Length: 338
Image (cartoon, rainbow, N blue to C red; front, side, top):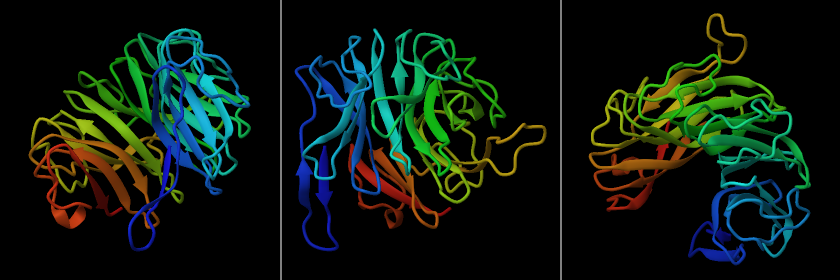
């Protein structure tokens, strides 16, 4: 875990940098920061001696467990650190923190005894499921925890939370019966589809849940929510030439795979829908003529949208990328207008 001070000008400097792990393999996948500068981490560990403190789950239960760690603002101490998992393989990939310091985590579980509390879905549905867990601000109790998936393989990539404590999850699924509610896209369309799901504040109900994809493979990797309207912004990777688009900057997939950016609108609800509903506000491909995969997204005041992307070559105009002349396997940052 590393904190870097980029400063207004001059060279970047380290504020702190620390290892986090035990004697096995440890992977950090997701991070968020609260208003006081505490870092919240989600990942995956095979270490039976992974550092824990004030833990909800103090021991490794399976071949690999997810972990959730809160680090002090100086990086020198654990505020809490806990395993999260069952007797199979579990991984935490995305994490978000609300204004009260509650941590929301999503990932993938193969365990049929993954910890649940007040769940929307109490049992694993297939080979593997996504999970969504809300951990208390103290780190030692669950507020809710649920499976989310169908009879195939389901993967929670990233999570965001709005000011009312409603969680938004993005991921991908190979399940033809993935849970949907008031969807933009009700049916599974390809080899794998992205999904976008919004949960109630207590995790026991779907507010909306939708597939998003074309006739090939599609993967959602990042999600962000704006503070004003509750729009969900999703980014990822598509191999589909018929991926849904609307008001696009780039209307076509120009090579074997492109990044995508989707803005999902919940206002107004669709006719006949019971509450929130998923509809598309904007969808576009911010990509070039080689392989691109977007991995993260954030929304700034405005809102503008920042997309972190792994790209090969021939990325979009250098007027809107952080680093002109993107080379093979280098990254890019794209800013789009709302």
